[in-house]
Amino acid sequence: MNIREILNINSHRPWKMPTKGWKFYQEWNNAVFLHWQVECSELEKFVPKELEVDLYHGTPWVSLVAFTMEKIRPKNVPSFPPISNFDEINIRTYVKSKNKTGVYFLSIEGGNNLSCKVAKVISGLPYRYSRIKRSKYQYQSNNTNFSDRLNIEFSIGEEIITKSLLDKWLTERYALFQDTEKSMNEFEIHHLEWPLQEIEFKNIEFNYPRFNQLINNKPDKIHYSPGVQVIAWGKHKLGKTASSK
Image (cartoon, rainbow, N blue to C red; front, top):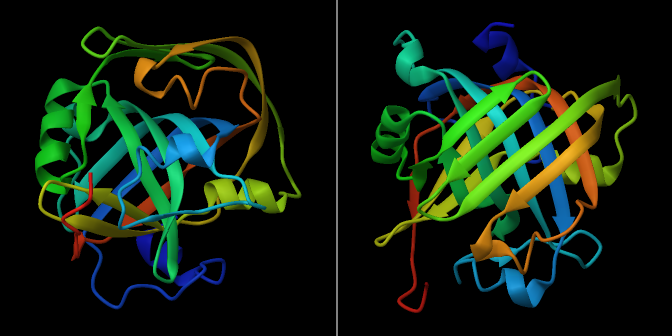
């Protein structure tokens, strides 16, 4: 689907499209979602004071999303596969800022060292390099600096025709908030609704020592998606309080 068609399909969004021109195109393909219910008292240790933890029926969630980033490029510039395509793993939680709901990254790993450096400079997002290897039904990652490790093997099932409210709450997010030393940044994005499929895991091994009070057992919910085409806008700097982490 071309970009104009994607932008014209927007009735599923929780707020209106940005009025400014978009800045980046990218694809998030072959995505595996692992979701955990967590304790708010533990999660709040990782979320900046400027953001409010978003709750689903009184409970916060954290998700690990493993996918392949493809064709990322600035507007009017062709993609360059040696940098534009790479595997990614992010650990995210769900937050609010004023009238917008979005995600906040606790961790972002990329499988291409150069891509991580470029993405970190352009976006300010805390990308770091990890050795990542994936095939159609397996995803492996290792980062010796942080002692982070992931190894999942799975099979993909039927399409989820009728999504639950929780399915949509966990996947349909159209803003990203991320802090730097000097500012809290907001990024708006747009895509069609995630097409979701059932997934069955043959093996799940993960170790993220920094988050072992959040994700240390079997996920409470899982999804697979073939992916979405994503339009992204430039970062908007929000205020940051002196007491923020």
